[in-house]
Length: 369
Ligand code: IMP
Ligand code: MG
Image 1 (cartoon, rainbow, N blue to C red):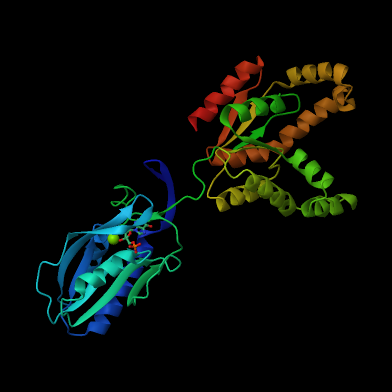
Image 2: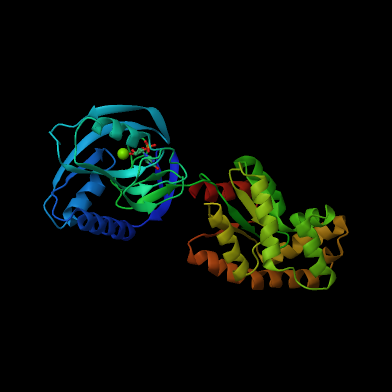
């Protein structure tokens, strides 16, 4: 992922894929033009890299020149196309091939046709490396197209976002979700996970997604997914991961403008961690960190016994049950610790101290991401 000014872009088309497309265009054009000596005309600024690679590969004699037009402002094509440098040579009777980096709305192309209307060229052909069919509003023929792409903003290989990115050798696509901080929060029973999640969601404007709460909500409201989950639970079977993922997806979509999410209670297995990565990937986002509160077993036992006295929760009253829950937690999370460590995303945080001390420790991890 790269950042240009205020926006994030993700890798989209590699150098290798670009070269394959350029070579194919060269072959097609050389084949069609036979022994004609064409004038290749690049449209500046965006096409400089394409033209350079193209003519290096072109197997026969050719001329190369440029015209300079400007239409784009930021992320949008504007109506006002400026002709900065026009045609500077006589093109009467010549075969002209326009080399465009990208055709989007087609406004620039319309201007190109206006420019050539009175030039008496023998033939005017249009070749564009990238083409956004969904955005194209004109009906000028495009004779050669390198790669068709969706109607999303790209940078690299000559294309810019407000001046930056032209130098990148590959193509990057604007991320639909801008930068989010997504955390997986872990902690053994009694570590204070719930308390800390509440502070963090306020402080960072994150949405806390507790899988337990999501399940209860869906079942109580008899959503389609809730009913599906319940049908497995009623049979005493585990709810398939995909059902849980679909529920989490619904929560993520409900909160599309959040700064990020705190996942709590999910993932619990390697397969679930992968499924969560895929879910975030489909949202152009990612899990940034697994943060685990670390508290010594003896302190946990003490805390939980203390809590048991006032809460009356049966599972907080019996020391051997408490120890079993703690052991089970470590058995289950070891796999996830490995999974996220392998991606340098595991952060253990000392969970002993006052609530605000622990919040500060968690914050310094989040601020460092
Ligand atoms: P059109 O006039 O809307 O077809 O846009 C063509 C011109 O807009 C190109 O020559 C580029 O300079 C610019 N452009 C269109 N789409 C993009 C993009 O996704 N990234 C960067 N520039 C673009
Ligand atoms: Mg251009």
